[in-house]
Image (tube, rainbow, N blue to C red; front, side, top):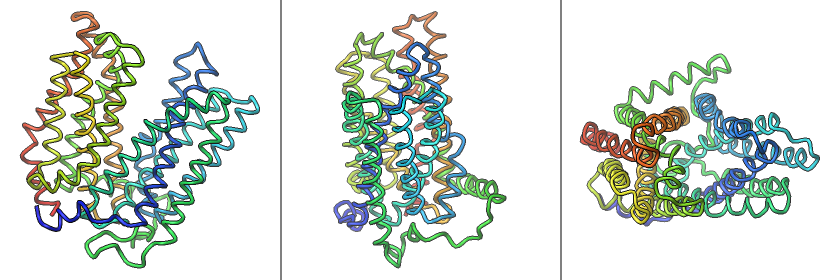
Length: 434
């Protein structure tokens, strides 16, 4: 790699980025608390109705399938930092309203599902804008470091701080976690306002995209033009060879990966014979691995031959999941979860950074949204397929061995993708991510 790329792995990211990172950390802390508080509240409202509790969770995820593409249009039409401030301000107000509803004893499953859908819709807007805004805060060659810090911070805030904190504050009262979320989102809004107030009058570097809080120089076509804008974003993905290849890879890999995610708790319980504490430890190993992977991406990009990092991450994770399928032993699975956590996040950070560099700024929101729609859509398909697959195979193999099959599937699909697309993916990265 060039000296400039090597220097980028240690160059400062700047005060505006760290203010943005602080806002993301506070927002993710709120999300982590909500991941515990909302399902717990739902279970207390419908203790004997698992389908109703699941309906609340589904309502929170549904906006990613229904609204991600229109949210991408919004991100490309309005000032992005302003959109993020507005989204978190509205989330703050919704949490305040929900806290009042719970405190007053008016909560119900339909009302909670409606709140979850609204929170999810605002999360779609915030996250899409946040991923798009990073390009205005750091030069293109430092995107791996910046994205690595953002993703690692999200893991720390959600997994190691937000979820345990959510359980702790629940003991003080069902409405208390929502008061905490108000405080966390207030911190996020204040930090974002600081980022917006210190926006430079020119791009960070001559090669960087235009500043995130400056609307793209394009015609505002109103509601009538939303679907035309969506189609433009989808075409931008399909007409760009590298983005098209990554989208196709996501169809196969994300679907297979989701079959494992939807059945891993049963794998830990029935195949490994562990309880909830063991499952929690595996999740912690994966999270720690993700943090390490996120921090190493920039260094690995400079140390490895140009363009090889995404392919190596796919190949490495595929081999690791085959190891779990072949040797379903607790020490093996713990090590695999740690290493694969780093490789999975490393692939995500690497491809996000490349996408940010090669996409024109006025299309970046819609391109990010289109890629997320593919990822989340295939994950939803894979999660449904995982349960059906294991149930069908359990009749012939037994539950214990059937639960090994999703890991085998992820490994085989990942390695098959590398065999078919690996060399082309390396070549496309080298051609387009200069």
